[in-house]
Image (cartoon, rainbow, N blue to C red):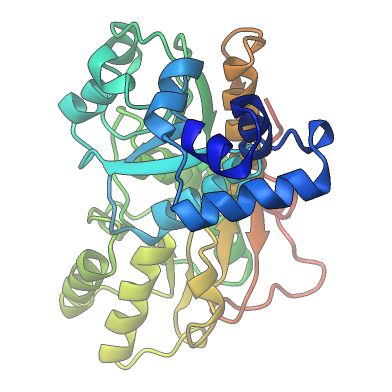
Amino acid sequence: MHDVAGAAGVSTMTVSNVINGRSARVSDATRDRVLQVIADLGYRVNTTARSLRRGRTGIIGLAVPDLKAEYYGHLADRLARRLRAHGLRLAIEGTGGRLRAELDVLATAHMDTYDAVVLSVASGDVDDLDERQPDKPVVLVGERAMKSRYHHVYMDNIGGARLATGHLLDGGSRAIVALGGVDGDRESVGELRVKGYRAAHEERGLTVDPDLVVDCYLTAESAHEALTGLLRRGTRIDGVFALADSAAAGAFRALADAGLAVPEQVAVIGFDNLPSGRYTVPSLSTIEPGNEEAADAVCAMLLAQLAGDDGGPRLVMPEASLVVRDSTRAVPAGTAGPTDARASRRR
């Protein structure tokens, strides 16, 4: 700054006003002269020194289980666009869904890299996470509600799954595969969405064939392998609730390999409303879990905490809704079931 000031014939304070955008304190002619000298000398702001002086890095960390998953890529994009409007940058890292990696993200030494952290929880529970005492803002995103010391934005997995399964049942399907489903009490994404799948059947007085709850990873490869195996065993199906849009892609391939037409013979619905679902053949019906609303809530929580005015931990669950496209049968007029209404209420 001293070099620029000397070359431009102004004070260092004037240079500081120019580079920090305080243009009201500097005439246009002086500002243009300072910027030209900066360009000629190749001057760059020392962001490390600026961060030390302000006590901020200007960086928000986002830790997700799987860097390859399309869902997390879109989550990162939504957050980055919103944070950029507030002069903040987003840095992304992967945890592999491992508990130790999730806890390490909240360790004090790790948090020094960021002004705040958004952690997508796959393995940790309340006791695990609350044992950490980070001195920076934290917002959790995940599948289940956890009343911890942190702000948390989560999905209506049960309500969304009820909507998806109810749509298939109301369209006439009766042998519906829960692809990626798990029966249990840990409240993972697979377990929560199977609860909604079962609830939709129960609301219509129908029973679930346990053989149709098919455990697999929520990837195209794993879903393709699992559904192919089920079909080769001669299991009759007429519907697939893929517990994620990524799994639905594998289901499309498995059904095509078996010579089954979608939706004429097997109706298919996903969950997540990924943009790619609009371009599959047929286009994919899915559940919109409130992706934009979730990103808004996360950023609002972060900014409030950074401003020192967050009001204590909050739980936010955006509303889930049904997106009907070509991969499911149209519901006959007058036969809509109870899940045609919105699946949840904001909490």
